[in-house]
Amino acid sequence: MKDLRGKSAIVTGGGSGINLALSQLLVDSGCNVLIADLRLHATAQEWMQTISQKQQNTQQARIGRVEFVQTDVTSWPQLEHTFEVCIQVFNTPCPDIIIPGAGIYEPLSQSSELSFWADPGTENDFGHYKVLDINLIHPIKMTRIAIKRFIEIKNCTRPSTLSSEMCVLHVSSIAGQRSGMATPLYQASKHGINSFVRGMAPLQDLLGIRIVGVAPGTIRTPLFTEDPSAAKILDLDKDFLLPPQEVAQAMMALITRPQKYKPGTILEVCDVGGEDRWREADLLNDPGPSGPASKTSNKGRAIEEILQLLGVEIGPVSGSKGVKNE
Image (cartoon, rainbow, N blue to C red; front, side, top):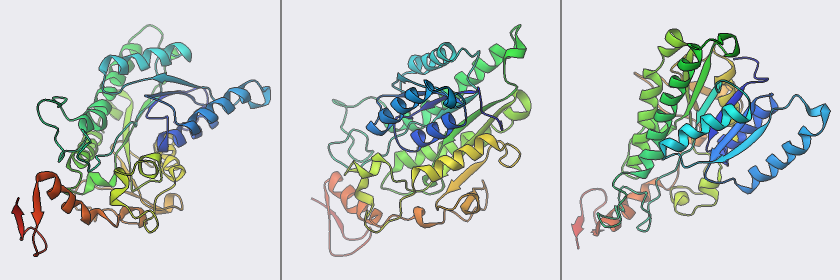
C-alpha cells in the first residue's frame, strides 16, 4: 500500500501518543483518518484544528481529513460503530487501514483497579481484567470486524470500489518478548498480540489482508510523563524514552512497504535513527530486545511494592528469601 492518497484509516487510541503521531503522518500522506478514543489530548485537539484550517486552503488539498468519534474500545458495539462512521464520513465502502492501537499500562497501585496485584476483590471487581480487555481483546475483535467487513464488500457487486488489500497494524511492545512479576497482565497482553499477528500471516495470500505489528520500547508519551503510577518503573532523568515520531515512522513503513515487511512481522523499535535501528523480532531463537529504550532503571523496585500490596514485609535477606507474612 505505497500510495495512501484517498485511503481511509481507523486509529483507536489516536487521541495521544504514538497513535496520534501516526495519525498525523497518515493525514500528511493524503489518508483520511478516523480517530476513535475516549478523549483527545490537548495536542490532538490543536492539531485537528490546524488540519481543519488547512483543508480550507486549496493549496493543502493533498492532505487527508481527520475526524474523531468517542469510543470505549471495551465495547464491541462501539467498535462496530467506528466502521460505520468511517464508511459514512469518508464515503468509502470499507476502511483500508485498521490500527487498533488503544492500550493502557498496568500501574502498581493499591488504588488502581488495573493492577493484577492490587486486585480490588469481588465487591468492586469488574469481573474481568480491563488491561486484557483493552490491550488484547479489543485489537483481536477489531481485526475480526475488519475481516468480516472486507469479505462482505469484496463479495458485493461493486468490486471496483474496493481496494484489493487491507492492512491491520497492531501495537505490541518489547514486553511481548519478556516476562516479569511487575506487570503480568500487560506483558501477557503483548505476548498475545505477537502470537495473534504471527498466526494471522496467511490471511495475506488467502484474502489480501496483511496483518503486522510494531513492538516499541519505552516511549515518551502522556502515559509515562503525566501518570506518576505508570512512571514508577522509570528514572525520567536517566532512562531513554523514544520520541513517538520514531515509532510512528516505523508504523508507516509497516503500512507502506509490504515487500520488505511481510505478513506476521513484529518490528521492534528501541532506538532513534530510522530503519537501520529497527529490528524484526523472530518467533524462535530471538536474542531479545536491545537498544536504549529497552531498559528501565526502577523496575526492580516493583517487587518490594508487590509484597506491600500482598501484605508481607521484606526481611534482611534479599530476593525471595527473607520474605515473611505480617
